[in-house]
Amino acid sequence: MELEVEILEVREFEENFAVKLKETPFYPDGKGGQLGDRGTIGDATVMRVFEKSGDVWHVVDKPLHMGKVIARIDTKRRKDIAQQHTAQHILSAAFIETSGIETVGFHMGEEYSTVDLDVPLLTEEALCSSLRLANEIVQSCLTVEILKVQPENVGRYRLRKPVHSKVIESGESVRLVKIGEFDISACSGFHVENTGKVGMIAIFKAEKIKTSQTRVYFLAGRRLERYIYKVTEILGKVTSNLTCSTNELATRVDNLLKEMKNVKNFNKRLSERLAREIALRGNFEQLGNVNLVLWEDEAEVATFLPKYLENYLLVAKTKNGFLLASDIMDCSKVVEKLRDTGVVKGGGAGRSRGQIISDLELREFKKLVKRVITDADTSAQY
Ligand SMILES: [Zn+2]
Image 1: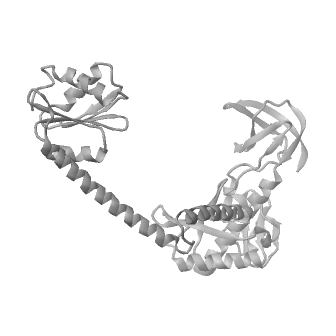
Image 2 (image 1 turned 30 degrees about the vertical axis):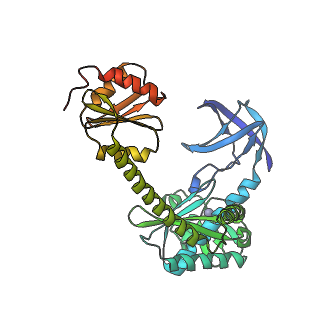
Image 3 (image 1 turned 30 degrees about the horizontal axis):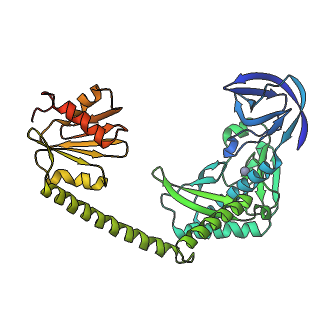
């Protein structure tokens, strides 16, 4: 959609520019919970549209000159917004019709939209029956009419939600969106002209919010089509990797998780057994009365070693450095001395355990530790 607009003001805004028009065809972001328009003004791209103190500002990526230019509105985006917004009206009305549940909030995002329902626990029956009715309304191809009604006449219509008193007091006509005989409510956003154009509505998630509300996430129209393509593709890959059908997927994943848990427990038992064997075998390097135990293999074994060692300083290689543990030395002092060398990047410790961030090899780190603990201070027992 192309039309001529007049630029009245241009300002620097954050890292871009904000433009005010004499009269804007762009719908602002977030008004009535809806997404705003995008497009171009002159050769600049509109990245955001916001309302402040009654003025509408268009955030654009280039500076523009005052005067008349051509603006283009992204109509594909408007169509998507209209599908999502009409779907919301239908869904909200369906929740009231089937279950008496009111909508208390609506948010449209770039990927999905949400309605907040005034119910602490949404039963599966309420969800399914409302969604079924909503899609029946979509398939009934009801006409969606826009009515401009004088404020004093608004009371003649049975609106889903009462119009705010400020709107009535403003004296301006009220825009009502009427979906056949199914729903009527005041709204300034975009809507399709026939419910059939919503295509289909799907709820893909419901979660409890605050203490007494439920948020449902929905998709409609082309967004839903794209979602189905994406989910089908993911399902195809996963079922092929797991060599099962879609129907078998949940059981297959459950079984795999159980198997994984068993394997983890088995590994844990093996790690502990190995740690015990290592401790029993002994033969550690002696530094005075301290057994210096070095470990650079499975991290889980290192976590069990302290349980079976005595008079030890354990130095175990980790992902980012080294783990220190001791029953005879103050690890915090060892770590402090190691940090003082300036060779290690950082670390922290309590008395019996410490962490060192370092990319040194275990052999080099061992030399450093030996150098540091020959210091009388750090070898102090506790
Ligand atoms: Zn609306």
